[in-house]
Length: 339
Image 1: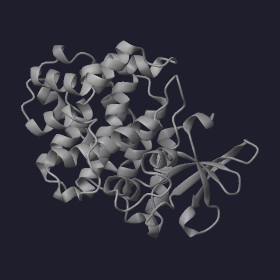
Image 2: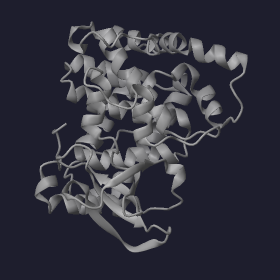
Image 3: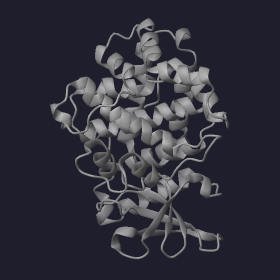
Image 4: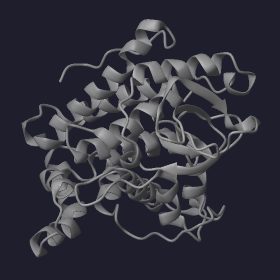
């Protein structure tokens, strides 16, 4: 596991060609780290390195990052545990920025997200492939894994008490009635991580069930209406959208489309139509700014509902091109250090 490549010159052609590869490399390296942590030299340093790698990729272009991350989550080949950890780490990084968390809290939150299930990596991958309900022994391991993960991290020389505490209680139920800013750091970060953990688990497919759509995942956590008093879910939806980049939608003209980028209007993203009402491929993807009228998004679709192979590099570059040539999207094209 060597040092990550730098993501400088973010919008050059070559960098975009390689962006999918960089995300896949990070997911694969994280898979090795989580599967055999006791064989890793300088485990704390490796986690910090992967965190820096993740930050580079998100700063490169947040919409491209979301697109590729959600696509990886739905089609991962390295195992559920690493894919889930990467989705949670990325979303926690974005949420830390949204909540303007102090650097120390942000670092503890993201690193807790990457390692919270390290005490049950093999079991988590096994459960994702298993069609039957968990056995009694598996249920016991699931119940005890936050503490097991915390103890393993201590053995691996993690000394950040906030990181350890958040991992140890990441399944705890923390009241949502107290404003996040008024809670102590452990409870504040546990609330954020707990919401992200549940959301990410719902969108990812397993053998026993298909992944839910992103919209259904949010509503399963917070109910039909995303209320402002539930700060974490509200901020998640406000920042990435009910239908984030990389997720599929049905349009009111019957087309199946993929979300490419967020827009300046919440929950009215830029989409590319891929299939018509009859399920036939469009000769070329048709771009639609749903913020400017027809067609509108009718519903979100789970990945399992769309039997379609995509060239993700083409899709990411198509979205970037549209954003650079649209006044409503241009301001959302991020550069290094902007997140």
